[in-house]
Image (tube, rainbow over all chains, first blue to last red):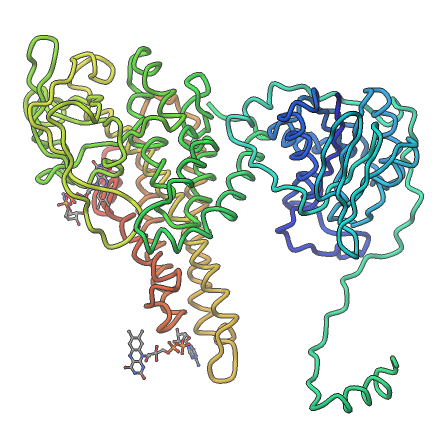
Length: 249
Length: 386
Ligand SMILES: Cc1cc2nc3c(=O)[nH]c(=O)nc-3n(C[C@H](O)[C@H](O)[C@H](O)COP(=O)(O)OP(=O)(O)OC[C@H]3O[C@@H](n4cnc5c(N)ncnc54)[C@H](O)[C@@H]3O)c2cc1C
Ligand SMILES: Cc1cc2nc3c(=O)[nH]c(=O)nc-3n(C[C@H](O)[C@H](O)[C@H](O)COP(=O)(O)OP(=O)(O)OC[C@H]3O[C@@H](n4cnc5c(N)ncnc54)[C@H](O)[C@@H]3O)c2cc1C
């Protein structure tokens, strides 16, 4: 069974993100970039499925700038077998990514596409869902546990009220939540081996996908600084303030 | 020899994550128990840290010196005991074999060094021969196709963990040209260890005496196969080691500065965060400026080191490596002292990390050539080349 894993290059989660002075976006020049943490979890899950003998091949896919090869290389060092970079300098949106992934899933004959539930840069939380809709496959989003047997993926999902378990007939789309697993370290010898694995370079046009943005960014700004709160002596004062000052009740 | 940049960036990110998630949280354990937990040592092996500097053809990663410097900087940012576990494999314990060993020696030893299966130590210092290493007394007498070794080695890092030693002994007459470097397996009969040294700092590191009584070692175990080359080998090894130590010193300075800045932002006296006082800012600023100067120097010298052939030593590069060791290890001493000062009384209390780093970094000015020895090397080269 072939697995496709999507990996996105984002600003490293340890970096304090700064808005560009012209407010067109966030500063990425000279900033450390890494694989989206939820995608690391997705890669880890795919590698575990391969180690269990469920998957036979893992293809790591990224859509973005040429430097995203490094992100793919990280996935290869973690255990993915080969990579595909769909190269574009356009700031891709979830729908465009979903279309590219659909084309690749079909081209590769993948049985499962694993993605992070969202990317920590724009936090869209949409690509997996859009992909499932475009493919017409069932989806198990926010996965905290995945089991594959007899053509069915049993996915435990983290939902607001607790946990929900769904059974998906393969092929299917799964998106990884935080507690699905703890991603392994790409060991140094495996980083060395990953250099010999191949990365196919494609353009969106090669897959017949138009990635032109449909959204326009008007302006990016920092969230307002939170002001210090106040302490109230009793409940009566609290209600009074909520009613008359904050005017929320 | 170097790893391509893309792979190196991934490797550095892996090491940074390992330090952040595994090593920093274990610092208290190491301090309290004077040992690095076994499971962490196992993880270090699995991760490949023992083979950082060993070329790929011998099963290692094959970092260039500038890349190794960047890794050493990261390793300096946590308790130095962690680095020490694999430090001798990456550096002084194995480099002599890599630089001057025969192909057979390299193939036999280096892959096991790179995997961490074999821990190697470097045994040069003796009770009566420290800075004046060329006067070492350990004798190696030829007896058939073996040498018989007698003598005592002192303060040998990782001796209690070592499976083999790169050990300097006298096969010839007095002076440097009478010294040969041997590969001595730790389980050779007649080799025993002294009791562990109780040290000022770097808790979790292991040093002790290595005592040799009629230790029989095959003549084929002389590094490079030719007697009388051992002192040269040792000096080349130390050249490289000095750059590694300089980078470690910068990493530790970075960590101490971070600890100090955080403390200065949190700690309030006279109604303000002490970081608002310019006298505190002055200490931070001096530390920052000195760190950046030192790190620039290390990056410059490691680049120069990579430009010359691995097996050759260039007096100009050696002089600069000594400048880096001299400056950076003294620099981190000053930074640590200011770090303690900024912490006030807390800086003297063991719970605070600066108290430990203050003791840990004291060693950096002593081993792999004291500050005075670096000054001598630099001064001598300045006059020689003038
Ligand atoms: C924790 C630790 C780990 C070590 N690990 C190792 C190891 O793995 N392998 C190994 O071989 N060694 C190791 N050493 C030994 C270390 O390299 C020596 O301690 C160091 O070289 C200094 O030698 P010494 O201690 O004999 O001091 P000495 O040489 O006795 O020096 C005493 C003082 O005299 C000064 N001095 C000496 N000669 C001169 C001179 N000509 N001019 C001016 N001043 C001079 C020195 O700078 C110093 O200030 C280790 C030491 C320690 C403490
Ligand atoms: C081992 C030990 C024994 C002690 N014994 C006693 C004892 O027996 N009895 C007792 O009462 N106390 C004792 N102390 C406490 C000691 O006197 C204090 O630690 C010391 O006065 C410093 O105060 P602090 O630790 O709160 O540091 P802080 O006052 O927080 O100082 C932190 C840093 O800020 C600097 N700083 C503070 N204010 C300013 C400013 N306005 N401008 C510029 N810089 C400033 C300080 O110089 C220092 O560098 C002891 C402390 C230790 C470590």
